[in-house]
Image (cartoon, rainbow, N blue to C red; front, side, top):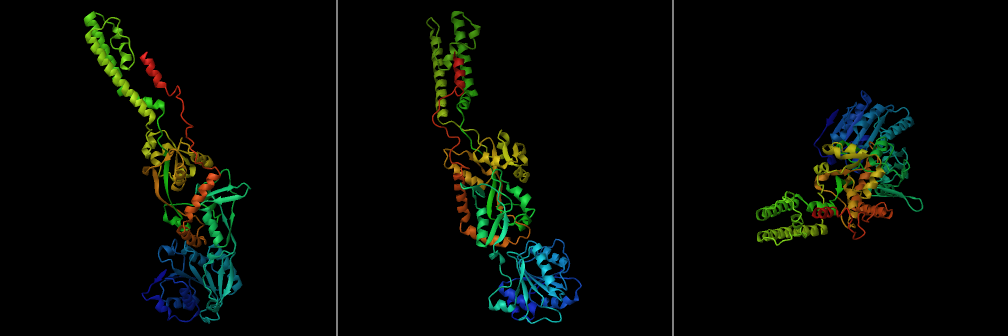
Length: 578
């Protein structure tokens, strides 16, 4: 491989280019759209190509010359993408040389390619073989010339070129320099501006606001979502026809990871109606630019208010019970001591727990001894009254406050809280596999299912038996629903964000010819705010289909009577006071 670079300014050198066919052609291509370098691929040990190589090296552009396979050499990894490739062949089509060019231009298929065929024996056969090879390698910008030879450079005005037309099917069309000048044509037009009703195979997942499909009342298929709507706009705007590669499953839609594995990676789809993401930059070579920026997070049930029975557990804490027990023991001992000192009476059964003292400590009535109590005992009863009043008032105030505004359970805010709680994380099998390195620390809290419809049903119905993985798009839909509810049912926090930045693009076949057109339209769609409009439209479709609801599934019908379970600890207190 040889690389030649010069410091001269290309526009100035263009004016002094020699007027043979190839040099004039490259100049015209440059004037149509500038390029910064040349990639030349040639057959090895062919002396008839040496004059052409010499002519190319007289030009001012840096040149990369390949004569044999360079292994994993990718031109886009080493040089500017604005390049024109020149393929030099002699006598007949050489597929191995074409393979060298294809490998070098991996992930750079929008490159303009000039094929110069010298001393070809059978031109129709050569064109047919080259056409087939271009189709196999997804090359769409190809210009073929037979008019150049080492002995006869040819007349630039009479030379006939063959321009590749990839849509709707691959074919050649003849083109002369005079046609280009007189009819204002281009050697390399942007073919994706018109697909001439070419049929593109697609397939859609069903994922929240991203993509939705359903049958309307008349049984007609309807598709919505900011991904399918973008693909449909692409087909409509550039004159293509979309066709589903397989029937859409209404009952059990495929997860996007399944579509990737079974359809995209096996090259069964032209443009899928789904998104994919990957942290490795080289995987983005076969994807569009980032269409959607997302975050991956865990959503957990919001902390709920304690039940009445749980409120009583808080009220009857060890401090309160300890105070009751301590007062009971102290006052029982005082009463027993006074009875023993002044009356000589000692009842061991009442020494630590007197049936007269315990109800008084709880603020209830108690029966004093039949005879007139001594003054010191009256003082003890006064202290007992004060203690009982204090404990009873404290208990009543806490009951009134906590029953009116009950506290909430502890909120799950980080992975450690999930591990310490009994709440599992429910994931789809594909999600669990993709996130296996992110959830290593709390994998014991994860359970999986391969039933995507079941998982979506639980999420959409706000089932609080599980925590779930969610994209920020799905979470946006949940927030829109929860703003109509009396209280939030699911929450998320910063410490529950697993992937803080997730760019999503449309996955394509390797070296897809549609990538350039998709990227062009993608940025205009964002500029005009179509994504937000399509997202809102999909949300209202979900409401009309009753696939999501803004009704609160946990809203109580009204004030409810207390049950025996609610009054469990009340019964315990009464039993203790008898």
